[in-house]
Length: 305
Image (cartoon, rainbow, N blue to C red; front, side, top):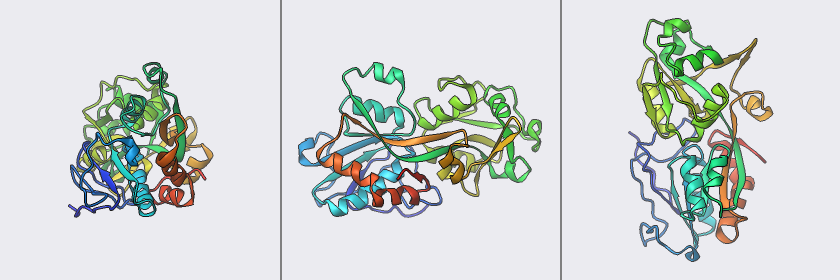
């Protein structure tokens, strides 16, 4: 276990799970991390927004970008406090809509049903980067020869109709199919590609996880797993596979993310209720500026500027 890094200028509460980082991210490692913005200590959640506090919650995919940006931003704005909580894209949208936070982190499109239950909210999306969702497998399966799966292969695994890797050209080993919680943005993108809709039942699933770090850990600890992750989380233990769609094999590269030829590409966004002003506007502008876009690239995602 790496020693946790205390980040000056931002308060981070990690309730999802134990956080393990992608290779390109220098971040936090603990179940609950409270980082003090000032000697005053942890800021309670009922602090008045007029005291220059920015509250942020949502996608665990966007989380590493926002935490690193908050650290850099607070170095230039020591009078502005930043509080960040994960929880998933659905939590980000709902929290903004109910005015529990100023910014929601979202790694998928906002759903019509979310807008319907938030009629008084004027949700405004600020795209800060682009990401791709990979179909990932345990490195042992990849090393055994499974480097490409067809779209239909993956569908059949999640429907429970293909249950052993030997059916897909791999070893005689039961497949451990890993899903994500229904409100997670990564799952929405993955299932929309496979089934044409995000709300899909997956009877072939053996395990449901929350954040990217949790799923990464489960797949890395297995020798027979398949799952879905942001491409920034791929490493030697959790490997992305090529996807055969017709006669074409779609590989996940930054160029394919930029030009849209890889099928599971998504925007990484900050969502506000209306056009932001004051400290929130400054933070959004920072992430869209050269320093913020450099952080997006550093975290393994594709900048939009």
